[in-house]
Amino acid sequence: MRQVILFTFLSAVAAVVLASGAAADGHRSSCPNGYSGHSVPQTEVEMRLLPRIAAGLDADPAPYTVQELVDLGNLIDENQDGTFCLKAVSNLRGASVVQWGFFYAARDNDTAAS
Image (cartoon, rainbow, N blue to C red; front, side, top):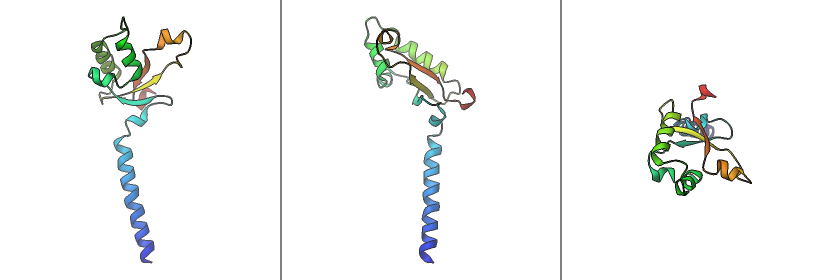
């Protein structure tokens, strides 16, 4: 009997711990299928963590500036929670390398906008 009570108690504790961890990252999970949640970058260092953005910043001529990307990221983040959703828009084969090599599809992580 004591083992059953202990098992039930530990299961309840585990459920609470797992639920609180999932809730902490819930805003990122509201991205639609194919998109992944990211913090909206505010510095060049943060932007260089995204491979296509880093390649665009290194291109000559660059298709955008750091400030343009900061401004755009803040516009996309409509709910102002510091998170948006990104998706690679091409497999980067053939002509798509030239057209989409430095870009992601972006949208806010607000589920109402899905």
